[in-house]
Image 1 (tube, rainbow, N blue to C red):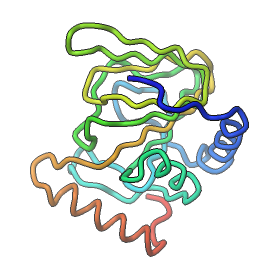
Image 2 (cartoon, rainbow, N blue to C red):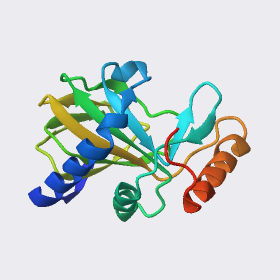
Image 3 (spheres, helix red, strand yellow):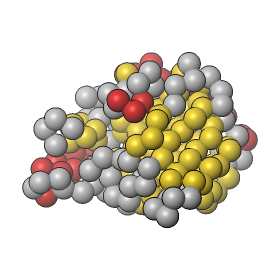
Amino acid sequence: MHVIKQLSPEKVIQIRGHIQANLFPLATAEQAKCARGRLNLWLQAEPNYGTRKYQPAYHDQRLWTFCQGIEPDAALAQVYFATGNHGISWHRDASYARADAFIVNLGQVCLQTKMNDGRLISLELMGGEIISFNCKLMHRAIPRSDARIGIGIWKDAIAIDDPKNWHGAMDTLLHSHERGSVSRH
């Protein structure tokens, strides 16, 4: 886990403002048990853990272009809101995600990762950092402010049982976004 880029304070204000005005009103309660109390909104595609397929998610071209600037092969992203100091407890990202992932941190937080050799890596962040990390290692986020916003970005998805369940659905969703037909799930 390491910081790969620091955004300017002006860029952080710009992104936070766009997210708060356009995406926060659409956010829903996080379904993952490790993130109870947190709000989120998936971009492009949302993994359905019950069916192991994707479903259409919100499409925001401005924010998606920003995410692809970080990872050109990005397939999905999650905008999350740690209101009321709700972070996310120890977890590994689910089967929808490859190991290489990114976080755009837009608030004060302590990110921690447990390495396979037992070491604990901690980063105290103030906002504006773009972090690259292995999302298959145990990790968590401890908010240091009441209104932290973050964006998780995943390069592409991994099939759980049948590659057609994930990749085929992802191809269909990406093509529908190209036609502009998906706006909200």
